[in-house]
Image (cartoon, rainbow, N blue to C red; front, top):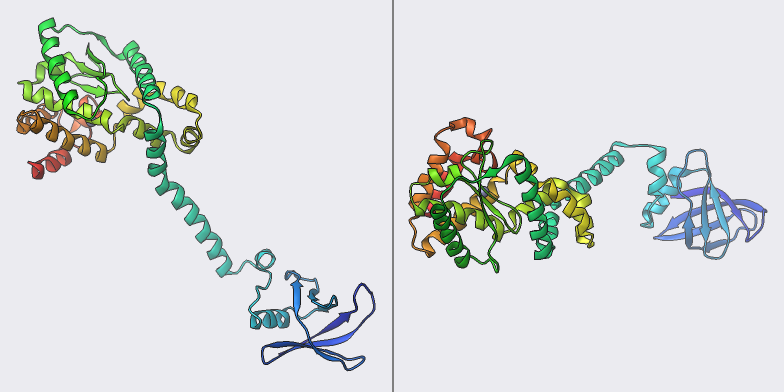
Length: 336
Ligand SMILES: [Zn+2]
């Protein structure tokens, strides 16, 4: 393996013909002028660029210059040194290099896509309770101003539901009792929903639809489970994306509060994820058993909520924020 070129003396423009060769793994320089033959080592090599001579710097300060790119690459490869990868890409976009770039892009994009739920959860779970409740309260006021009307339920009826709610909260892991609001709503029909850190809203139609206390406890326990696991914030963080997540992680909570005011719209139009719903259902069953209520009543209540609208449920009412009736009934069954 021989490489022809010119050798320049240290800090001099004077050059003479020379040859670099590889002998038994050693790099040997042969100068044509004086017949010098010496083992040499490289300090640095210029990148490969079309139309430019390669410059190989020797440890003794001399410079070897050659037009033979392929020969230089072959010697560098034999010595186990990279052959100027960065510039090589600019010069000739081979399939291999394009594949490398594409691979890098897919890796980064995949990391962002699959890393999002993890980062969103970290941001949501790291937010202080006080801020979560402040945000939930603001979001409730927002919804209350355009979608909810005062409840027509009798006080006795409200007191009964409130008693069941407080009993369920005490059985949960919550360290506080979220606010409970009774509202009428033509828009939302028979419905119940939880905001981050509370409040929980129950519509008159839902209370009327529930055949017994067991059924009500099932729905209330489901909403309490959403608060326990911070599903609202976690859902929101996934919806708002990286900008807000990063600002939350670095401690700028004010941006999150602004986003949360728009939360009811997100919750009602897009709903929780199927995984969050099933998790809340399962937790509701555990709380019901713990409190000696009949878990079967919860399944029957879900069927009652689903019955009036059928598949159209996915478009409106409780099912728009609680999607996938068939899936959820299926998920409930083996747990019983
Ligand atoms: Zn739910």
